[in-house]
Image (tube, rainbow, N blue to C red; front, side):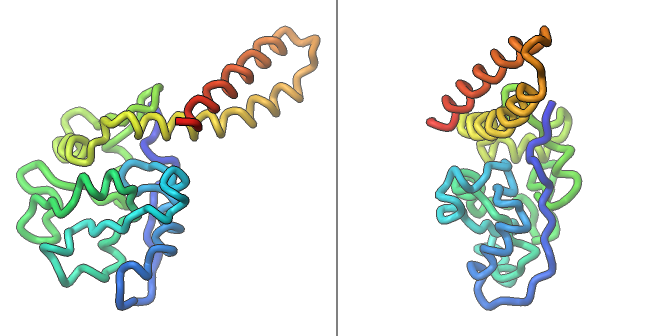
Length: 195
């Protein structure tokens, strides 16, 4: 079991700006250049050029939150378009209503509500109805979430195996196994990076 995201985002205090799109650079930094919902790095969407700013509580329903930094989420287009202006509660503070709704991506509960299996598929904690709702609404079951995660996984794994191989004498019985593991990992990395 792996965490959904490598880092859990935390919004920093920001000076009040007149337009929410002016916060994009700060959001990118606070969300570690990754979608606050699915954890996909923005490199897969033009290094942020195509990333969206989601209004957690939709601006179409809560106009007064349109430029509130605390209501903004750095989001991949897939998650933002899927979420759209959906909101289950009657007020902006009722994120979860009748056991369905949205867990705030910067809330610590978010990190324990979702995880990835060994193949990178996003899963939700059984019994967490809000997480189940989000999983389906945000289309976390799409193959793209798995592929992007696997590409990152192998991209980070290859240098670690390579370093270990350089440190291992050829006479060591593990040397050939490490070499094979490195070649297999490079092959997997290339496969997922090209998709």
